[in-house]
Length: 409
Image (cartoon, rainbow, N blue to C red):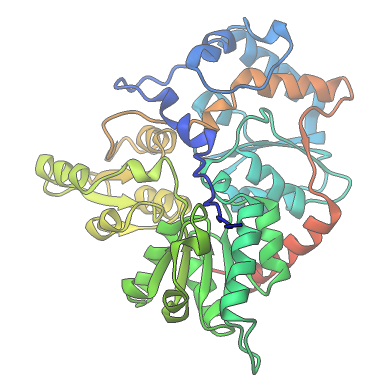
């Protein structure tokens, strides 16, 4: 009998396929009724019928009333990429890690309403107290990048890497796993169990230093572009970084390639940041030779190389807000954040590199009507869409997060 090994079937996450659902050539990201937005063709969590036809004005009035009634028992966290009609109600604004820290520090709030995506709510649950409850207004708000690193695929890849590379000797591991904050709690837990850590786009370079002081090479999850750009910035040659394709046996790599590598990059990316191109940068400079170009390190290498500077969401915000009046800024990150920076800094010329308006399709699913729904649930004594990480996963993921805190940055 002949045995034929099968090649894993390539699966594109639904969240990736849905990314262009809200793209438009006009700059007006006007919030419609939930019933109208349901026509976009993406997945939405079902809600009671009465919320579908509420006008934006009715929803806003309802949220204001609910927030007044609930008071400090609930805190609302708003990620920078949220639409304006949602983030206006946020007690704290920031990137995913900054918001999770706020959640952990807000001890008086029993309810933490995280207006972001699923992995962010999980991280908030990891860092908050046991008597606090984290709510994600729309459970369909996932993350295409996080979905590209399914836990079963990563576990299989880790087993393969251990088979080829071994565990190491003399106190030095053969490979250390690092996962970007934009990953599931299960992936963070895998890193915690195997001597690895979590990083943000702010401290990825410090995480590389930490890992390479303890191991010969790094497995970087799930964003290959942040991993590659960080490695290049630290002087790691591009040829020493290989890409692991989870849909090919052994990631599509030979044993020799793995042994010769310094960084193994998971084949994942951000659907928003990979839209930015060198051509867009060239066009911006052609129209304004004095323009400053700042992009997120989740962009592809060529875009990061062509930009004047790159950094995390918080880096971009601080850089633009702290720039002199009269300066011009072309920004390569999510459109809601760019628009907010533009509106908050009228003394500067600020615009998005991509002329097509494409909000993050998963963030955009946090419609204000969902926020009203979960707030009214709290008023009725019901926790809707509570995100809870199981105890074992939480224990291991916290190890990886605590190592990240030790690294700082």
